[in-house]
Length: 221
Image 1 (cartoon, rainbow, N blue to C red):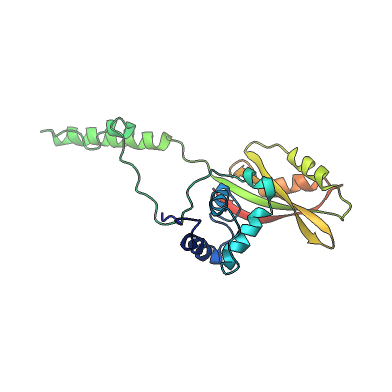
Image 2 (cartoon, rainbow, N blue to C red):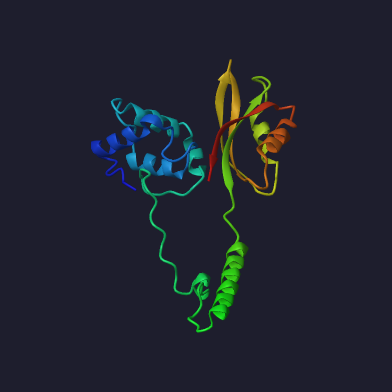
């Protein structure tokens, strides 16, 4: 992956500006700690001639201290490219214990039997290994009934929802219309355990605060 270079230089700022020409964030569809890394690397707002970088910088600035609660980990300011090749298997990996073909034998029938047994054992071992846990990061927009709704109380109520596989993240109040604000709140869910439809219904049960819930962004992690 290629580095943006010196973010204090015009070349580095231009690299960021070109990268953000058709993107909202440095990585994915929601703000993350990667955005904070680049933000801190720049140190100050880019000049107006770097319009895409300035638009992004102003957006991240609007989060204030909440940006340090963005999900993910800080890392180098990079552009995506081909993934690195996987590291070589360790010498003591379990798969190395399986001999797929067995030893040479003068008795072909016996060699075939041994090979089939070892292939079956190998397949069983691979099937027993657990796969990765599929997760999604979701940005929910919770809309109130009017401009008199207590938005702090709304957020407190939403965060009381606890489900196995659900983790709440950063939140922010964004303008909706006619002076009404909406609560935009991030959450990370395990796909096999949490249904976004079920979660939205639970939020709408706080009918004193919530008029509707929309999915603003959905990203696999």
